[in-house]
Image (cartoon, rainbow, N blue to C red; front, side, top):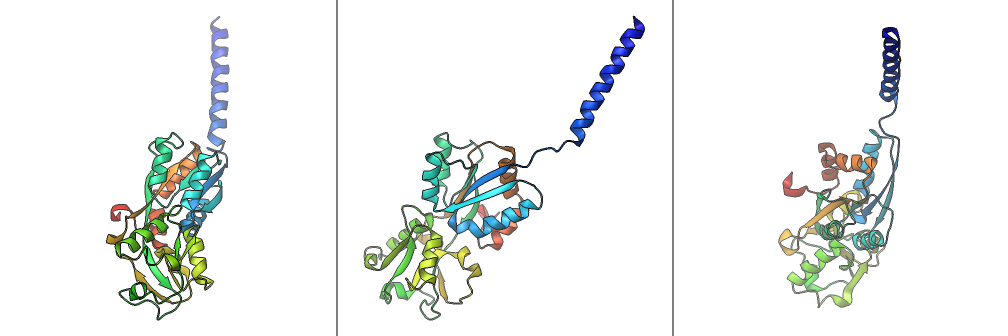
Length: 258
């Protein structure tokens, strides 16, 4: 009987050792696909973050860009996204409150800034008198109903008492990327865009940084929509110091200057 018990114990040890060995050499996680919805103003920065993340992971990330409002509508109607990088904090908060996002995953990943810009080097001076003089045919802004930068532009123009006066001159882009295209193409002589968008603009042009006091801070928040290890890994990476440096390099500041 003693010999039988000893044999059984040896068999158990061998099986356990084999299972532990298999677990040790098996990959921790298989490569997954992550679908990430990103507000158009953050496209370039998101691509840089994804590129750096790919150096650390085999996961595949599919990027879907558009206005914050349009992406929100897609999510509400069932779009299969894992992460949502909005250009505001309002819509990620709503998704969390409505049970369409993972509670506790939301945070501010960047703070955007509004700038008045024109390809014409002489168009904008240090006090943006061009707006008061209305010496232009078209001013491009993002749609305030869809894009947070458009809402910020509206707040600024209202604060200056120019919103109603400039209505005949306004050209609205669906998102901030389209707004910049209107200016680049010459369909508008100037426009209110994101500071981050101008980093790679070759045309020197002229610009005026809109003082923060004239519009609600553009706190851009991200939220996890579906619990998935790969998506969670990317979200954790975005919180890292390494990612913070990349985000700042693209013209954004961080929440509370952190």
